[in-house]
Length: 283
Image (cartoon, rainbow, N blue to C red):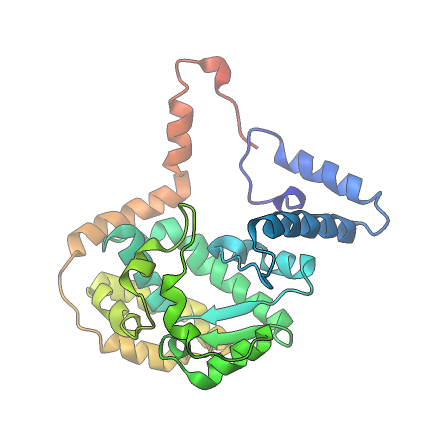
């Protein structure tokens, strides 16, 4: 998808020039960009078919940063089934801190998900709400039978309550995926619903949460199934202490510098200092 998108790539080759060339090529195709998307769809379905059993009806592809190309995916797979699983934004942020930061503030690494991602998903849902399925994380983990029956019906399956208890037995090959979540939860659990309040436990974190909720705004939250006032009230009721305050202050300051200067890119360039002819601009 990014082969036809000017922004978002930092590459050794001239990415924008490559996009111009691909666009120029697509202009010569009978249906233009639609032919390009059809080939992307054929490419994906061919590989998914080879990775699936002959009896499979769906290949489930859940990749968080697909939020960057959500509308493109829907254009490429008009017959696809799209499930929007909404979760309390503060619980999402807390889960990132716990899962990838081991409790230490790390959200500066994930602003693209917390801001662009949420915005993109709300926009995609708003444009396709009549053909996609939407449910809340809270309904999922509490086993809301009505909502789950709706989900099964959307997928063309007969509702089978036994499936809600056996998902933990499914073995997925490969290195990727939510291994921690699978180890912690072998069945549906309501523990994650309030766990975020244990993570957002000091004044700095709660101030960030308050600003974040106001950025998301009442309108987007309502579309996701939440009320701004309810989430602010829950945040106000969250106990506050001094744990991690010093560390958070340093990490918040570092996070601003990190997002502005992206030191990981500079570090790679610096490693080539002894080979000056190999240091080149990425475009």
